[in-house]
Length: 259
Ligand SMILES: Nc1ncnc2c1ncn2[C@@H]1O[C@H](COP(=O)(O)OP(=O)(O)OP(=O)(O)O)[C@@H](O)[C@H]1O
Ligand SMILES: [Mg+2]
Image (tube, rainbow, N blue to C red):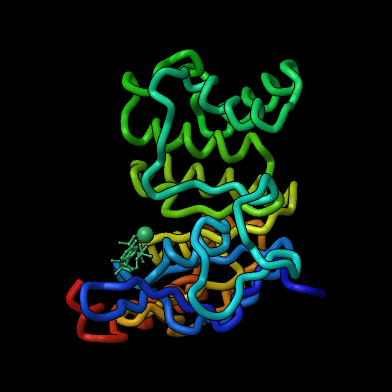
């Protein structure tokens, strides 16, 4: 089967005053249709850059990024992005923010309302649907941004540390809800996180990146069945895979181990 997303020798450089900075260096990666892949690595190794390339928001300076076999030359409704810096419209309520993308996609009003309610419920914000962002906590704003991406129901979800601002309990809940939705609706998910446990719990494969230049260090298969449960999270097999990923992230270079 053809991959959903393909990075083929993808590089991204940025010009500096008198040199060139390589944010990503010749990345090769295929993500299968309906696969769940997580990305971990030290700060600055190019995780957000990788996601932004898949979203078509950044162009590669070398190689190519293909989505369904076609170059990703711009963003599309097939790919929903949750940014590391979530941005909500301050003048719209939670519901207004979640419905916004649906409006752009010309979804009729009743259907818009239904899908927004469902997405808001998934992230546990139903009691705050009429609240303005300024009255929400950081974690609630983040959940609103997640609901906005879920509502559009894209085939591909590109998530950049979406659960970063959440408390541990909400985080675990949203991990389970995301896996639930993924297994029912079968999307392709590319998910960036700093949290090694989260990376292993969610994914079929964990991509470990290295910095300077940003590149793929290794790819770790997570040979654990779905649905993932607390029993799996506590199993020796889980611990073994987590340790493998941990070693790869934190002992790959002096810069990484200093984190
Ligand atoms: N527009 C830009 N101009 C110059 N350098 C950039 C630009 N965008 C990103 N970079 C550099 O590219 C590198 C990779 O950035 P990126 O945001 O992808 O890292 P990251 O892995 O997501 O880090 P973090 O874990 O901190 O979010 C960084 O060193 C960053 O400084
Ligand atoms: Mg980032």
